[in-house]
Amino acid sequence: MTNEVLQTAAQTLPHVSGYVYPNEQNVVWSVLIVLYPYITGLVAGAFILASLVRVFRVTSLEPAYRLCLLTSLAFLLGAPLPLLFHLGHPERCYEAMMTPHMTSPMAMFGFVYAWYLMVVLLLELWFDYRRDFVKWGRVTPGWKGWMYRIFTLGVTDLSEKALHFDHQASKVITVIGIPSAILLHGYVGFIFGSIKANPLWGNVLMPIIFILSAIVSGVALCLFMYMVLCWIRRQPVDMACLDSMARALFAALLVAAAVEGLDWFHRIYEAEESIAILKQLAVGKLFNTLIITQAILGALLPLLLLGFTLLSLTSFFRHRFAHELFPVVRRRIYFLSSVLVLIGVLAMRWNVVIGGQLFSKSLRGFTTYMMELGGHEGWGMAVVLLIFPFVLLAVFIRLFLPEKPPAGGAPTEQSRPAEAAA
Amino acid sequence: MKVPPQIVRLLIVTVVLVGSYFVAKSLLTPPTFGELGWYRAAALEELAQHKLTYAGKQECEVCHDDIWQMFHAGKHQTLSCEGCHGPAMRHVDDPENEHLLKPGSDQCLRCHQQNPSRPDWYTQIDPEEHLEGECIECHIPHNPTEMPEEEEASSEQ
Image 1: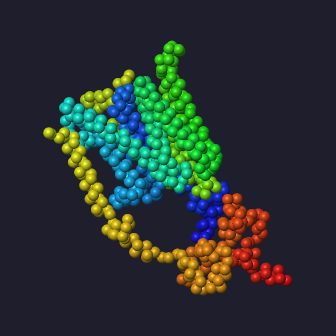
Image 2: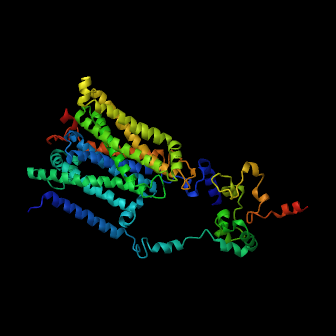
Image 3: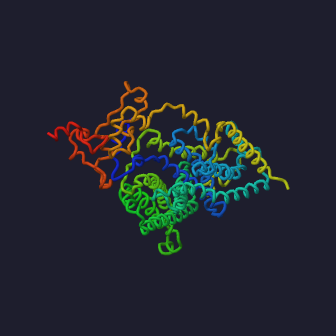
């Protein structure tokens, strides 16, 4: 036992500088806890982009509507996996639901998650897809046909009245879904923001920062997926849809960057006793992920790129230069911006989760996060868990967003995004 | 007013899902859960069956009264014996065959290595400058202000 303690100390101490309490030497919330808010944020953001179509009637986004919802679903199903693997005993996860503790914020997240999955996302998808499930179920043979027929839940009425009800119900669910999506991700921000012992986390702005960055990352992911899907299917991209997504991304990124800037401005001006170590953290251990990746590559550069590109679409620019930027240039800029934003938001999650554990509560020392390559919380597992929702999304797209609808099934506008636009 | 078929089916699905949850909850919740608090009451009995590994400070006094007296006269009196010597239950059960670990200088340096974040009044050393050989050659860990007998003897001469 003593030898084990000494060995641990010998391994750990070289990575510690200044004064660090014994229980702060190792970073316990690992990269998997970085992935968890990242993936949850993508869910909330993708749903809010989809809601622009139903609630706010942004019709130009219609071609990407279903893709946004399916993206949201695929990532929602992948969101709890990092938590389960981090806890080490995934087979025990049901216990949190069987004996729910109403005063534990983390335990209650299971119910927030279940609400969002069952009451919001699956219901909205069901009302939106019911007509297609009925039609596809009639003409598709084999297991796929069975699956579509089961998904109708036996409601095969395709009268105008029934379809109108579907549409109205879908709208109502979206209205409920917006605050639910905000609750889903605001809750993650709340978990960090309510830890008052940690000066980097304990901040009332934290839920707002998380929600805004979630919207940014979700919009960027939908833009990225839409372009990748069109590219794989060799279909032309609907530029009106893409421009709308880019506008939404620009607006969300502008607000998110402003609020995060305000957070740091407030901290620096307020100059509480923790500010000295937070400044050291920002320009030291987090320099690459905070200053370079999150602020410059993940926010400033996409803002400039998107800002100039969207400026070229204004009548002022067209009048002066007689032409907007060519679509091919715009597409590349949008694609690059979405990738940069996705990396920037991942860096933001890293900075919050890992950054918050790198400094001591004594405010007089730092530790180092050593990430293993293998192991159940290493690079390998992180990459697998990050890729998993994309694999799930690929399956969903193949089943529910077919390039060509099953023979005999009437093609819908939503099921053929690029063709409809082309 | 006729209820739309969609709502009827969704209600059925909801009832089935919620019903399944409550059935699962009644089957999977451990029988003694909640009797004493938000945990399984039977767990207390199970935990009490675990073999002890730490003996506690009082057990050491029974056989090592001399060290105990010295220890409580010195600056280290608030520390736990097992903090440096490791878990002692096996040694208490079988003192002849199970021996405790004798900690080396590394153990002393865990607390006394020079560190600018430690307060000035706290005894700290730079091992490269101060340490020659083992700490116990000049210090008695059970009462660090006393010198080992040999050293005292040689200094008297």
